[in-house]
Image (cartoon, rainbow, N blue to C red):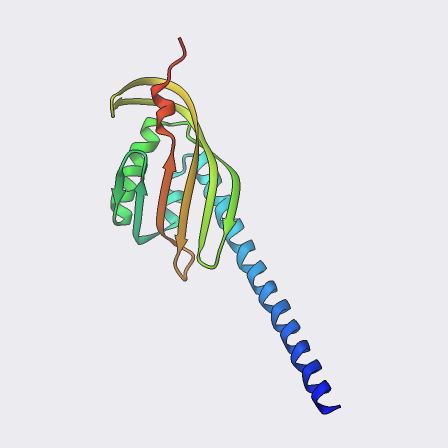
Length: 161
């Protein structure tokens, strides 16, 4: 009888622990959901100041398609300014978000009209869109410490005749 009571108590403790950890994970996920929503809005409004507020001073950024890298917030700001100059109507539309303990993986669409001379391109207000995968890591203060983007930059080389 005592063994049965102990077993029931252990099962009950296990269930309570599982429920509690699920509630904590849900709170955590809701927190990132709000941050990512604000991040999406800041990109779509081309709000440089707001965008920079999401990043830690020692953020590491990598754009795999164009092999652009930065190793701190100042360098990232330069890349951000360059991006917003090339695509002044830049839009970010999140398709899916996968969240973990200190990271988010996004599948999203970037779109706008690009003007660029370089990278083998001569574009003037070229309308484009591309699907992007981003891996975003956060520190304990919910600042982005690492951002890696991978997208199909080849859409910029395809022109309708």
